[in-house]
Length: 132
Image (cartoon, rainbow, N blue to C red):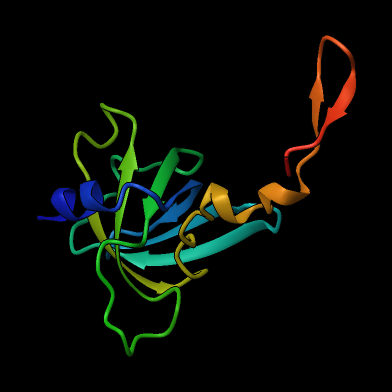
């Protein structure tokens, strides 16, 4: 079910590195934040993953699968992925503390008003008037 939820919302993966894993299921990740540096993520899994997730292991975290609307941002279910041989399938986590999920991408058409665009004729090197 988790893989289906992630497939339906493919946007939202965050890169990270395992900092520590305890036998009682707690995992500390050091994740990258676009433009904001690093963000720690403290999560829990019901099984001991310490034999597979070693400190320094590269992982990806997806926090957009399903979240209770009343939960604080950055808290709730998540999916963890790693290279084959480390984790052969997605692992479900509960994020206890961390950054909010990666926001939706901005649609390209909202970046700029086409009326503000400058188009240059490469042959003449003159600007074209698109308002005609």
